[in-house]
Image 1 (cartoon, rainbow, N blue to C red):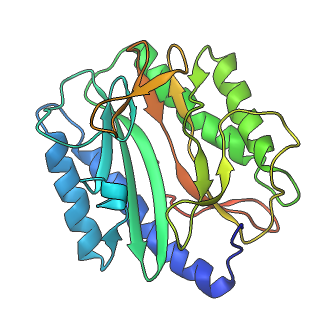
Image 2 (image 1 turned 135 degrees about the vertical axis):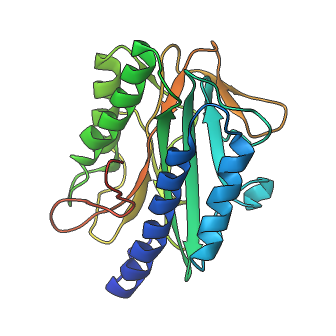
Length: 251
């Protein structure tokens, strides 16, 4: 069942999402050569807790960290550890914060120093595909209108969209109905209704869209070892234009 939020619930979600977006921005500022992924995770954890919130991901189905930090060919769910970032890496950071009963969820991919032209194009296309998608996130449209717009833009730029993992509703639960794929046929899926809150999150690969999950049960990498990028915001369906709840300047 798709949860439709009332104004009180939406105000709480805005607060949760503001904390979440600020945590993503903090992580992005830390992406530079010589910084460990564990240090970024610790900073995200400490910031979220300092705001009176809880990291949504920590212990979620056993996940051991507060942020997912995925480097280069890791698509999603990279577990922070002792890896030290290097010049030329691209670093996807996915964060969530739980505040007063509601979750926010967002992600972005950041350049570590100077990166290749291909890597920069991948980051740019992934981010823009999100905006192409939410241009369709209006009352009366359907979920796969968003999906189709993302897929069309990504593939027109020579990249592929991951199919094994999708966006989702978000609110009282970190993952709610409906699923929001990044590929599909327009005019399909649940109809978009004001009060719906969804996490739209293109995951885009340079090569094949096939992925594999490593033995830790979390870390998900491209099947061909090529680069991947991720961009996500929590979005509210309204009577007019969609509202990005996890908005921060520059992200």
